Length: 220
Image (cartoon, rainbow, N blue to C red; front, side, top):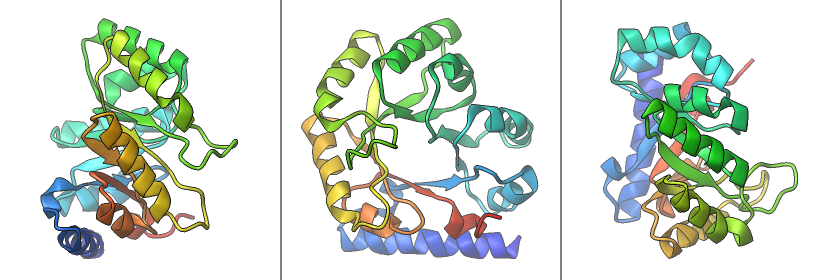
């Protein structure tokens, strides 16, 4: 318990310092604890320490562990940060409070149907393939205006953009580009930054940072 609280306090402190350097308020930044691959016993100490926002990569994994955890603490906020298959859209809408990986037309249409059917409206981010990497999900930068227009036409409200910069390259220019794209399209939220670069992301406009290793330790 103490170790989890110490890790959480350290990350929160780094976020606060970065926010102040950027002349921002620390409470503008939402820390998402990336709990993918971690079981309930690993998650509970962070909940006890006060963490409330958690991120998962897969619908199936989240379905297996989060309903029981949320029964214990209903105010937990669950974010889907991994790629979403269109045929899992209804399950995702039912379980998650936010979905960070809207990236293509078929998923927009599936989410619109799921929202209509379930009556739920999770917060939505369009994932942008900010580094134009073939192996990564995300909407190409050039296609972003059309995808946002399609989402609006389908009745979806997009709250922000998400991106994962290329590995082993300085991330700052990619964060700056995502911030610029969000501003250009009048979107208030930017989901960017992970354990190795979240302070840089905060300096460059992140409203949501997705931190796993720095909170849970190295994965097996």
